Image (tube, rainbow, N blue to C red; front, top):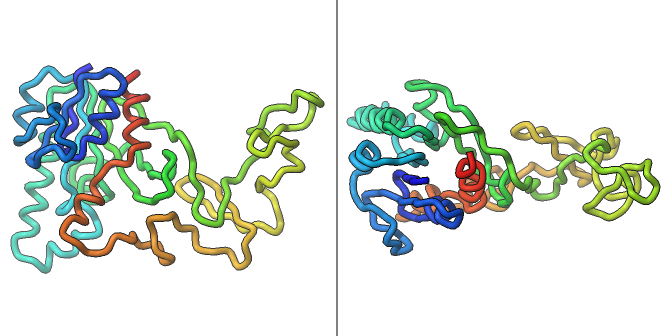
Length: 257
């Protein structure tokens, strides 16, 4: 399948699809960070509208779209017009003549000005010790299925007895494969442990035996839940980079759809 990765210069998503045998190209105004020959350095819209693409994964810049920065629109002259331009760009991407389209962005103006997102994902759902809520607008593509849940520091994913296979030895008790013993005897935290503190996050139930219970944060967050990346000239580039686990899930699941 020919796959266009719009507004990507890192090559993370492009290479995930190429590793699965797809003809994937990235396109951005910036040169390819990895020096790949499978990168088109130009405005992406003529490429999206002029090529025979089977799928497009689009990462439009979020500077003037994300909720965290919209308060500046009333304080800085001309900034609101840039948000309007960014929304027109998103609309053009979503209307490209490509069957399968996935567009990602943080929570922001897209949901209120164009349409609600179809799915919200986190890197900790795909094997990374990190939190970064990302919304997906999908066209003819299924929601991504999480591949590996990484709990916040000090917490464990709550495990139910019915989620475990039956022990082959006794043929009766649930068997915990993680600890290689009966579920009733292992260190997993069940759903009704009196000494545990429970937190429901993004639909997943985590628990801790630490007292007092810490705030649930991942490795890329400060104790207050903020991103650890400090102000810098390349902060936007680091924040925009797709996590490899998410890119791999896209290639595995959408590439086979």
